[in-house]
Length: 379
Ligand SMILES: *Cc1c(COP(=O)(O)O)cnc(C)c1O
Image 1 (tube, rainbow, N blue to C red):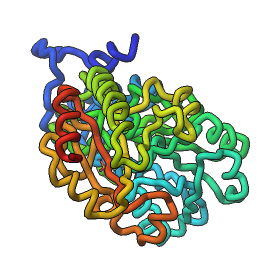
Image 2 (cartoon, helix red, strand yellow):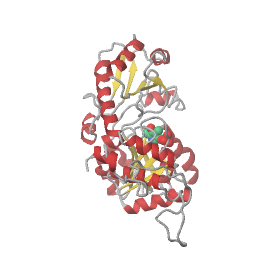
Image 3 (tube, helix red, strand yellow):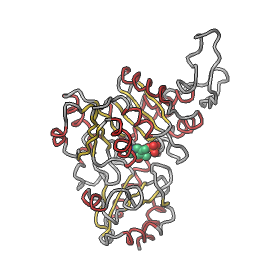
Image 4 (cartoon, rainbow, N blue to C red):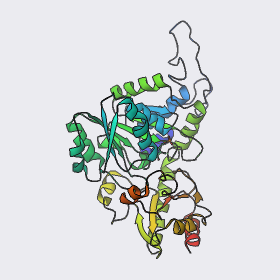
């Protein structure tokens, strides 16, 4: 089945008792048994729920993995992955990481003796000196937030495999429409389905896909043991959202490319960060491992101040000022004072994240309206 067909059909079956074509919301905690242990595959909804199962089977098919698992949020999904490890084990992670992921590794898991090292990964060979005998997991996020750096998934996975280390890719920014890390050698893929997969800014939900049945079983054991599962309503909304993932992503990527082309001639802009630009340092890798370049764009200004950025952000009407990304509506944000405000300024500047950096999550509105909105705000 092609991707566009899988988003709609994979894992989905008409309800046998009624013929309902859409997956019912099985709002139930338990299931009757004919005699003890004699049931239809569902015993208790922390362990399995039929609505959640459709979503889990669907994402497994979209990422070409053996097992999909759904969680109450992207970070709950990440929490389950890190619980594969034991005290004394180490995580090697990219330094350009989603803030919540950084917080989970640093502020929660270090207390339990699982240490993390954060290093740049845009040159894969440069990670070798940081791998120790205790490194058990490599955590990649690509494209990264908000500078849209690209990491070579295949190269990092090859290094990890040599040393028997698991590789996990946070594929939230690309979505499975643009990038399938398991095909490039990764062991586990994570999604904050809150973003592109659900795509309508009305659900918080996380997904994992394991490449092997064995790894899937281990993660399912943790999912059931810790219980951070989504409810059937949120599972249903995500199943509904994913059906249009391909057309939403296609349009959002087209809009983003047109916005970048338009902004390139704007005299107020210092630099545009987008992997589709031939000047992007890892443009070639992006072209190899992604089907298109994504709908997240960042840019900074020649007048590199909070005030200059605010003057633009506060004057857009269609681009709404909000955190999050990946919905049908376009969003605008200021990482230095929003998502990355907790990072000390010196460190932030060293990482290349300037005071005036503006991040766009491009939606699927008409391109003329989006460009007119940016032009008006920037005038
Ligand atoms: C939002 C996000 C997360 C966290 O997901 P939640 O669903 O908010 O818990 C993790 N990684 C990336 C890249 C994200 O954008």
